[in-house]
Length: 478
Image 1: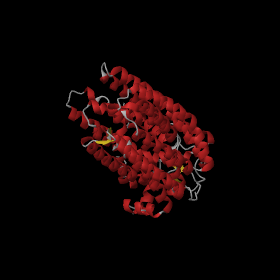
Image 2 (image 1 turned 90 degrees about the vertical axis):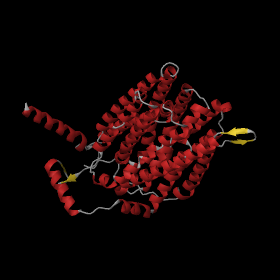
Image 3 (image 1 turned 180 degrees about the vertical axis):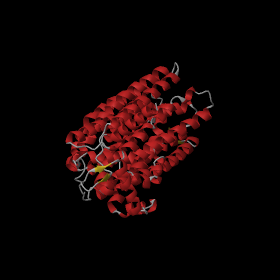
Image 4 (image 1 turned 45 degrees about the vertical axis):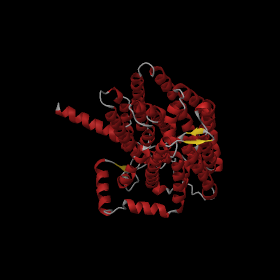
């Protein structure tokens, strides 16, 4: 019996080592299959982001008695959770392979599924609110820890000349999956809202759990073009040989750069500062208004879930159509130029939201959705692409971590300021020509002007910078 248990244990550990530590891509087909698996994993992950945030999270929070201002701040915890990356920067630097870390952190998205079961508990609204915040924050911490590693992982699988094309196709697939699932989820909540919305919450939680499993399985099937320790023949070592090499490395490098030294080294680099500034301008414009728009649509504008999801679905079909075209244009004319145009479209979306009131909510929501789809067809790709263009390959993991964590903290602080402005304006309403001005309208105007400044910064400080192409990404190394 003991022998059987030992045999099973060794077999399982061998499978874990093979899947998570020995999955080197050996052919172009391996690279292509890994990119396909990443597309599948990312589609599931982006769907979870939408189901565990925005309108749906606002619904469960409103059901639990959380105010509009606090809903916006809580949904911004995703950015504050990025602080965990900064504290773990030395740990992340020591990791030779990222696959196991990314898969383990991705598995923690099951916490988002548990959030939708909290309303079933026979406890007070205050206790429900605390549980929602705690589970949401812990889940976001794990997601943020794995984010830089997953970004560096996929960057190493995609050749520079194909980045725009691949990321645009990946996003097109993800948008189709997200929009289809969101439309279904919106119809589910609309159906159960007048009957028993708790049943709708349970169904949404179940969908999130299934998507988490898809995400983890797809990531586990990917290959990772990173070697740990190699011998004199250039072959990768495992087991006791790798342990000896690791112990030898520790004795040679007893001291390592701390967080402050890594931050200093990053901000000394001019290209890093420029890419980081773009990220922070986007973060400021985004978090000053976006976290508060979902509750605005539900409460003040009184838009039905099905209408919001249906328009979102149609707009996303348009986004799916234009995203690959934007990707090819980015490969031809540069990531920065396409990012500038799409950030301007996002700014116009904020301006449209600033002009939206209950009387014109339906037509302006449609216009705003088209502008948002145009923008999000490339904004995320463009921000990441500019960072890949400007970050040194040997420092990419660390610099992605610094950018994500520092800008994340900044975003959370901005959302707190936005929440304070929202609460103040709701307590002290203002009027313009006899018409009441909603607090969210003011916040969206601020977001518009911030993104306008980001557009000018990209034009005169980013597009004029020379790019150093990394030719090792997406190429067979063994």
